[in-house]
Image (cartoon, rainbow, N blue to C red; front, side):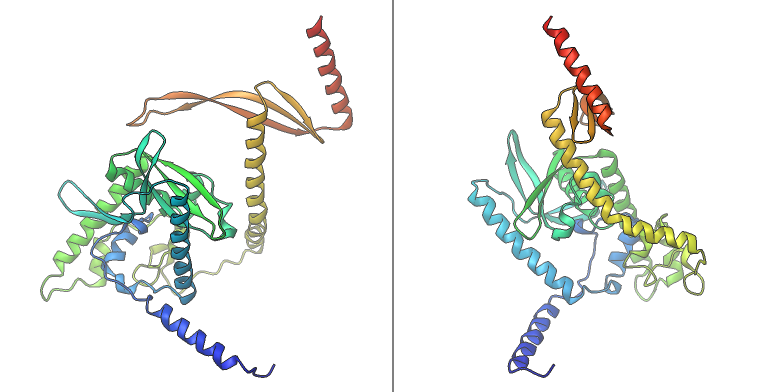
Length: 360
């Protein structure tokens, strides 16, 4: 295809856009961990401060995505205010220190809202790609994800600092749809986060003290002083520090190992193929059971199409937490089984006879 009359103009726009995005691509020094980057690994947390310059810069596509997300956040804030809901303490900086006065974490909170009887409930507004938006409905969904697990952890740090046991994530899918996920404080998880931060900060302090004056801590000595490697190799593979400033022992040697196991490779391929179907199943399962909870009562039996649905009330025992006593809650459980036409006729007859008995 030959050059068109506007090709030079389009190329100029592309060049200017890339230059503009590149201006936001710089790496910035860190002197302490930041709330938006709480990871699962104390070693990674320490390396993020000690070797901030080795962390790869975001690509131009990702910088553009961040820019679009920020603009969408501003639109969402304006829409919320038009609904008459006030947002306070927007973008307020906070610092979390340990008992020794050391700075464990620095960050900023997106804001607070008054939610019914709760005053000053912290929230974080996040934008999410539309293809991912429907995959996350609960805190557990987010915590299972290698990247999005940072979101509830970040919010719990805000809750801890504000001495409140609840907050929420406000998620925008970049197309105008919103979702809200309540994030109650999980004290065990928060305790682990604090321990991880304390370990990382203490390590940073020790290594920086050892590197005073003309004394330089070499790589081998630093490896000895750093926190242990993460136990999960799959997490290491996704880490920015992997084979830059951190090489776990299960990856040492001359390159990666190649395993000749076609049957196992086929299983991995099949797993990837089923991932989309599993996501669709989870979404439909939540929608179906949500509708049944609104409509059915305990001991109800319904026939819908070729399916027999039975509702049963069960009890769930909740363990005691520092802020709450142990308690029992009730919920509806649904048994959904396929039925034949013969089963349906039999069931309808039984229900009819039962109703006749009631009228006698």
